[in-house]
Image (cartoon, rainbow, N blue to C red; front, side):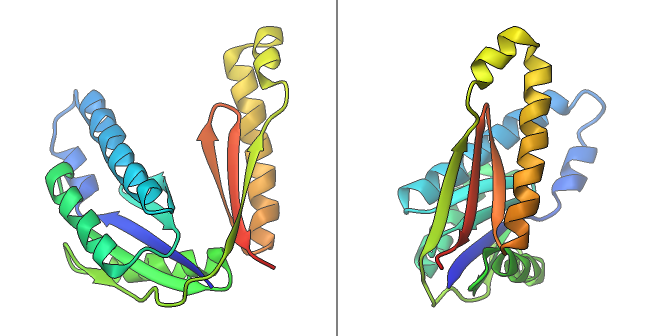
Length: 181
């Protein structure tokens, strides 16, 4: 069983809309801090976190309930809005994510809904795109980026068919999670 969590920022869209017209740089700064905090937290606990949208972040790895409570305390000091966490485990990371998403939307502010009592192995595949640095020089930074995004989309589609999750990590890095066969 693979345990997945969804961290949800409640009222995030409304917060961004009430900031006025010159707000994007503030939003980007807050998103970077939230990503750093959540990603570092999961990494220190042996897990992995990635933003889906910055008001929804996915975590992979079976942390303990006390860990999720600790994360909510960290977010209370970092996030401009309340957070909730949805948890779920399944043999498929994709299905676990779907259940965890539902639970995150059921959770009240600063609460956790779901269970993560069945920890199992997950396979993580880190993919580096070969010669992407050279490609930048031969085409352009943006053209190289588009090639990687297209490749990411193809990989994500294949991994989804296997019940897994795929994330673009920036640069030429892609990571995929599937159940341990």
